[in-house]
Amino acid sequence: MTTNSKPAYRRILLKLSGEALMGDEGFGIDPKVLDRMAQEIKELVEMGIQVGLVIGGGNLFRGAGLAEAGMNRVVGDQMGMLATVMNGLAMRDALHRALVNTRLMSAIDLAGVCDRYNWANAISLLKSGRVVIFSAGTGNPFFTTDSAACLRGIEIEADAVFKATKVDGIYSEDPVKNPNAELYSELSYDEVLEKELKVMDLAAFTLARDHNMPIRVFNMNKPGALKSVIMGSSEGTVITHK
Ligand SMILES: Nc1ncnc2c1ncn2[C@@H]1O[C@H](COP(=O)(O)OP(=O)(O)O)[C@@H](O)[C@H]1O
Ligand SMILES: O=c1ccn([C@@H]2O[C@H](COP(=O)(O)OP(=O)(O)O)[C@@H](O)[C@H]2O)c(=O)[nH]1
Image (cartoon, rainbow, N blue to C red):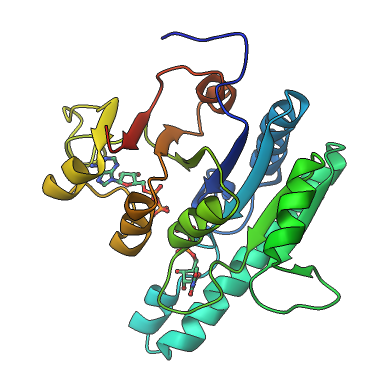
């Protein structure tokens, strides 16, 4: 592992899955996990890194799951998007308690709760050192927050999308099912497609590929891993054109 004394990135888009917020609970938000993540994000802000954040909603609702149970898919997706706003509110609160200036934006109008997503405002807030949380995904059903992370990452001209996950990176197979799976440190977009590795859904992935947005997958359950990858360690897996 090699690290430099200066951060390797200037502006990042960090994607946290909703499940990452629930810790060991089966549902909802674990305040201890939220506070730890807020502290880790604070460290980045103190190093001068501009942080955009996309949070999932899978700890509360997923449209596909609700549709399987009989609900209309669009309504289920709307509930999923609102779940990401709830997670965003909780994360903003944790960041404010950690004394980090943070703005919450939503792709859906929620006047009185948070700002409506606005690209120009987001850029100027990031430049002034605020963390900006992009919630409600893309604002459209049938998409995921991985798509939102790639979309916002491209829009704000982030250096890379950092996908925080529960495993150490991308493996030759699902490491939960096969503990002997091989961890990749680098992959090209084409290799991910050829090998059918499940990194994110295809819509999100092809958006990143077409706009040359590097994706780094790393394990957020490891304390300090976020700072370590930002400082240029080779932890996790990076996907680029190579
Ligand atoms: N080739 C693979 N490499 C790494 N993880 C994989 C792979 N295939 C499936 N997975 C699974 O994907 C999960 C992480 O996906 P992620 O998108 O972060 O979760 P979520 O679906 O909660 O958003 C891991 O827990 C792992 O079990
Ligand atoms: O652009 C979007 C992003 C999210 N969602 C809905 O919000 C849910 C929660 O997002 P996601 O599953 O991506 O969360 P994560 O897996 O990251 O926790 C999804 O299942 C969808 O129902 C949506 O409809 N459009």
